[in-house]
Amino acid sequence: MEYEYNEPTMRNIEVEYDFIYKGLKCYITLTCFGWRGAYFVLNKNNRYYGRQLQSLNFIDCHGGVNYAASSHPCIMSDDEWIIGWDYNHQGDAYDFEAVDRLFGEGTTASVKGSYYLSNANMLFHGSGCRKYSVDDIALELKQVIDRYKLDE
Image (tube, rainbow, N blue to C red; front, side, top):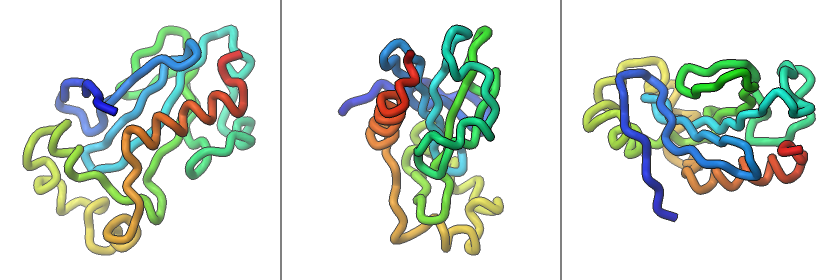
C-alpha cells in the first residue's frame, strides 16, 4: 500500500499516518527513536469514552493498551478520548529508515547516544526482532476496532 506521509516538525514524536475507519479517527505515530504507536479517537457518545487504562485491559492488542487520555502530544482532539498502544516491547525492532524519512536525514545518527539506542537496549530491539510497518499497525487498529465493536 502506498501512503502519503505527514510532513515533519521539530518534536520527538510525529503522526506518521492517519486514516478514518468506521467513523473513528486512527493515527500511527513514530518517535525519533524509531518505535511506532497506534491510536484511535472516540467521541463523547462512545461507551468507552473517558475510560481509564485499568478498565480497558480487556482489549487484546500488541502489548496491551497503555494510553487513554483526552489529549496527546501530536493528535489534535476536541472533547474526544484517545486510546492506544505502542510497539516498543522486547522483540520489537526500531524503524530507523522511517525516522530519517520523517524527522530528517541523519536524525538516527544524532540520537544514537540516547538510552533508547544504547547497546544494552538494542539487545531487545535490534537484529532478529520484528519491525512493524504502517500496514501492520493499520491492520491491527482495524482488527481491534472490529473485534470489540469500538465504533458503536
